[in-house]
Length: 215
Image (tube, rainbow, N blue to C red; front, side, top):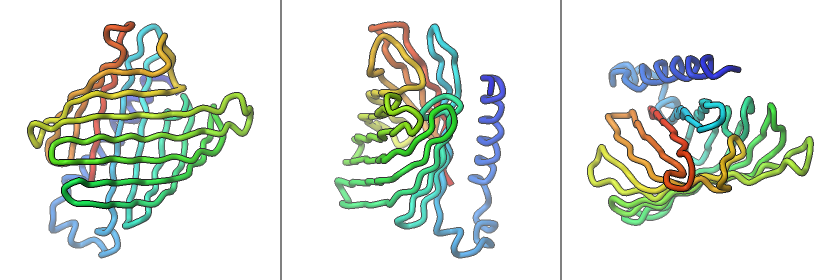
């Protein structure tokens, strides 16, 4: 799948998700009670990688009480998809902990199984979050690897969030094993926009443009 097609595909999904996110309340009320208990999120990332092919990745999740379902593409590897199931846990009010242990099936250029997690801790306008997975490559055990993404964020305004980020990935490679950098993002209603800049000052920076919709 070439880059142009990937970004077109991301745009179509984003527009359709955004349209549903803006559905009037009276229309939502017409839906079944079961559907109102579900929450959904869609995230699209565009990676601008120096001296390498730029690419896009997507993730879609659905949550219903304890149940967490998620699908990803170009996340663990290029031209690779994954499907996940997990359990949602929450604790605390002022200091809020959210944790989702899960297990996934990986298919495509990389094939395997993966235990994973998503964890966040929030206190007032500060937050720290991390997600990771260990992919057991069922074709070649030497291809097994650990993926992680971590953020430390601060929200001076309800619509503004900024902070530090780090990523360890197999999809692209630089002179650094762990990509590290900073980010800034804004939100409007149910839509979030963020820009991440990795490795600035160490090597040619990688830029990640992210759009997320929740509904």
